Image (cartoon, rainbow, N blue to C red; front, top):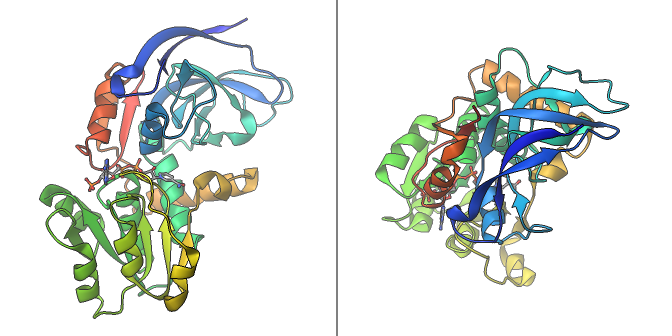
Length: 328
Ligand SMILES: NC(=O)c1ccc[n+]([C@@H]2O[C@H](COP(=O)([O-])OP(=O)(O)OC[C@H]3O[C@@H](n4cnc5c(N)ncnc54)[C@H](OP(=O)(O)O)[C@@H]3O)[C@@H](O)[C@H]2O)c1
């Protein structure tokens, strides 16, 4: 038996309209697998890297997308933790979520609690688990530390600012417009810099009395990299975790030596690679939502049919916060 589905596939790399809707068949689940019916699909900037070919996909046409929430439609042999009808979510960087139904490894599914809706789950799973490991696992941060986060009004950015404030950090956020500045402030940034109209390095040094920050969280890449390094305090760490503006310039590691700086490029999958890590991180995230630390309401909700528009809005920097797509 197969399960009919409607999927958005890229047939070639390029702008948002390379995404085309096709009818596909989802195979019977193999051992350890389930078929998930997606009710909501999460939109993430990494989807744009795959659509453009910045990150290559194994073959074309290809279903991209890295986050979904819905219910279990069928289970394969050996699956004991999930039954048909269970509410589940997922956010691995393995693509394939732009579809009404798909196969998934049961061991990688997150069971959704009854007080977290599919829309909320898709708003925060990938972005919230990312903000979480950035704040809690990449480097040791303590209350009172000042850190810099670029694109602070974005999906990961808002959650980072909310959670960072709750952990006692002074988050300096950069944004590209006054509207986004207000959003970043509301999310918990202690200071906000419009990096289109102000030199963010000068402002960071001003805010920190010339000392620089303990860590910079930089997913912008090309446009911010060198200045981000200069914004660090001695022994500070530059955490690069994306490249929305393009590839990073070359760096000789020896250039880090005079100020004993550290450079890291972490990725979420390596922080939730075991079942135990995934469940612990998801539980921590859901608790942060319940306590009011993290706001799980998506900023934008599109229908799955509006996928091309949603991609274009995210790529052209028209969004703030999280975007989700509902499947009817
Ligand atoms: N390594 C990991 O584990 C991991 C996991 C999840 C996400 N990420 C990365 O984290 C970043 C944030 O992801 P997200 O889904 O929450 O996206 P997002 O922050 O909502 O959107 C990206 C933001 O980047 C800023 N930006 C700066 N230069 C840009 C440019 N040339 N083109 C487009 N945007 C530009 C824009 O904010 P302004 O207009 O304010 O500049 C834009 O809103 C992405 O780079 C993503 O790849 C990494």
